[in-house]
Length: 389
Image 1: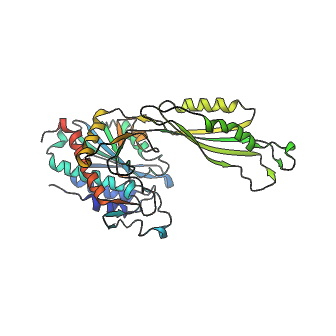
Image 2: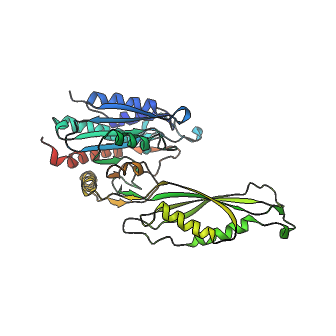
């Protein structure tokens, strides 16, 4: 029996579920109830306990014959902020003036609905597809939060269960201004650090009896704010270092504090690694005769996808719908693609991202329908050499 899924209705239904990280159970249940009737085997994967508990989903159609293409995404959303500033209920999922409103409409419930609808249409058209390939969904409820018990843990589960994926599309909103203009083919790494410098507390009127840690910190950090980490590569922009906060914990105007802490973040390309950055920073800090402590962590290494078939299939699919060429980009922040790249080639393509996380987040219904067509075309192109109509 052929089942046709309306991506607009499914997206609206998903938005009406208030799935603020990590409370995504009901949204995942809705996806399961949509996928099972079209032949998917669905497995809930729950990791963590208490407030850290996250429900995830791995769903698959096919008998492991031919390549397994995975669509990855998240149904958790960020909080709406002050709901009084919205023109409508942020979880209404209402459609008005050809726009779908609601938290998660852009990031990224609509792209999930589009891929499910395109997959259903594709399977309706391709008899015995399970003899030639597989399609899977990796859906998490922990992308907007700590991302500890979400995609990262699902990838570990896939590896331990010998579940092979040959290529993956992450449905993040990748386009700056118009649908089809940008495909993400990689991401920069993210390295965060905290530098704490210790001095001697004292009265501002007697500076010779104190040692101001703020002055010491500024001497240590100023060269880093001016340093050219690199000039970028063919695929990546130059790496950057940004100071994000300075804290002394001192509300007094006449007391020199005894310590100061500075937080910073480095977005780095493939010319660096977390080890090389750590070595560089330690060497720089240790050159100063100052008592300090340096804490750091790296939650994402840079990556670049060289899969010609995956990328070219998406480029062709986009062009067939928009009649325009796409830019291959590695700009922006991190995404769950950083976990998936460990097991298969991965690219990202979704909606226009200008309104994600904003008051009155909304997306054009035409873009949702066109995205569904693009995903449908992509499936046909990607599996073309394996299919018999």
